[in-house]
Image 1 (cartoon, rainbow, N blue to C red):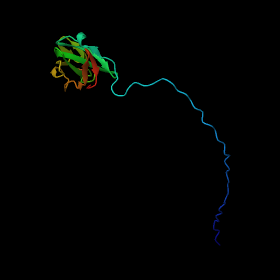
Image 2 (spheres, rainbow, N blue to C red; image 1 turned 180 degrees about the vertical axis):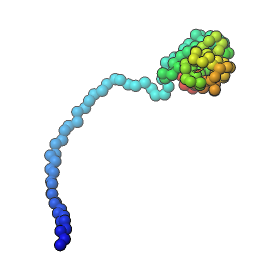
Image 3 (spheres, rainbow, N blue to C red; image 1 turned 120 degrees about the horizontal axis):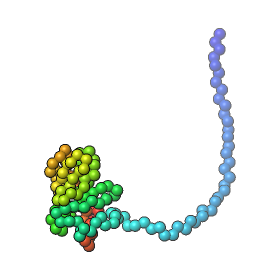
Image 4 (cartoon, protein in one colour; image 1 turned 90 degrees about the vertical axis):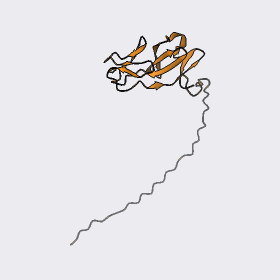
Length: 138
Ligand code: FES
């Protein structure tokens, strides 16, 4: 004697009647608050006049530490200031760039002079407009 389970399918007919309520869209007037033009819109990083010829200054671009060097008068080079050894912030020191953590020294073009840093400081695009250094290639 088999007692097979019986399946029952219950068909529940559910009718949903959605009330046709129409809400008038409220016009929200938002005036002002225009965003700046797209593209690189960072302020001046430094004045060329403040970067010593044969030296460098520290600056910040997009929250990242950078160095602006002027090995030759009128030629500004942007470099990441993040040491390629272990990520400390490299600082200007005379005519060179020094990492205070383990003593890596870089030249003003970012190349390695001495210390444990395994690679040059990566370049950062900057350009000069009206005597001021701006981020980006311009
Ligand atoms: S983190 Fe710069 S020398 Fe080690």
